[in-house]
Length: 174
Length: 287
Image (tube, rainbow over all chains, first blue to last red):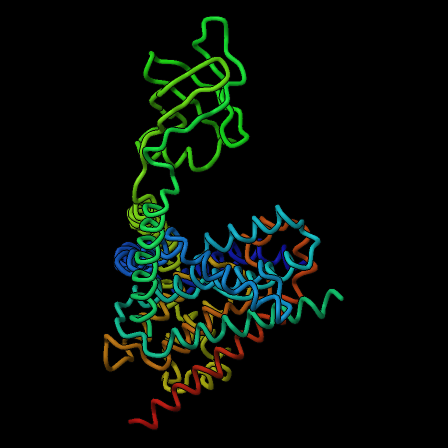
């Protein structure tokens, strides 16, 4: 039911917007062009922010420092009873979207879709966003340089999502 | 905070890569300049095509002349051999120097390899700088589409219905946005797209909302309370339907995850709101 809703919503929305515009005698074509022109500028404005963010994360990953941190966390994770693999998802998720897809694909290949580890990682993947990417894109588009407390709030939400994903999945499937 | 996190990712990354390379040099991890003896498993009648045993892997090799041998690599070959090959700007082949050879074994001098991690880090920086541009340019089309539609919504007045509908909830989250401001409509459309798992539509709508929030912002370089709240909401991903990528990866298994995902994402969203509100209250106290 929900899946079908998603398929239908975009064409229906476009239909509503265009026909309502026509009824209100808006020059729909000209106005569309006027709005669409901004798309290019925004995308170009984002580039410096994205380069800055992605290259710093790439250095950190390629150097193996990320793996080192994950290895260091593993004894700690064992004490609390968290599966280590899930911790790697929690660390990588806010940093890189493609990286977290990689981690999830890797977990599925190693443990299978049915395992509790994969379920935890999938819930984590589904319940938070790539915080640093969203920050770079949204603030890049309007050239904000001082992000104030936005990052703290985003990372706090990630941490809460991380803990919630583990405990809720554990409770839901046992 | 962002400055510090950004700088520490770079500094930690480069120093860590550097430390590993120094370690590799000191302990000669890659056996630079060491004569290594390998077993010969088989050779053809002309003694040109050989099979070597390296670290338990069988590798085919071709004699080029008396001094040089060409080792063929494939995806099963040991990783460090591939690293040596790529460090010498070769792919899937390794030219080694023959020191001595008899019927059962061969002693080789493999090409040297230095500063491998630093090399990888450098490559990664160039690759991602290019990738970032591709990513941004890839957004142009979808961005233009949604911003075009948003323009029509504004001009036709459709936006006013939307604002009326969501005002009660949003005016608590964003107390400083004037009642009939179009930013409220953009925010609510972004939220709707997020809830339905339509990431492609959500980003341009969110950017539109940010632009409208920027018109209300007194200091154009600093994020306002509204922006921080809106960003926190977006990073916590309010959603009822799982993202498309997850459906692609997990297949039908995803359906049983919908309830836990909604519960977990509610926790992260509530946290985002509480933290953003707390910071905003603190900032007001300072002023």
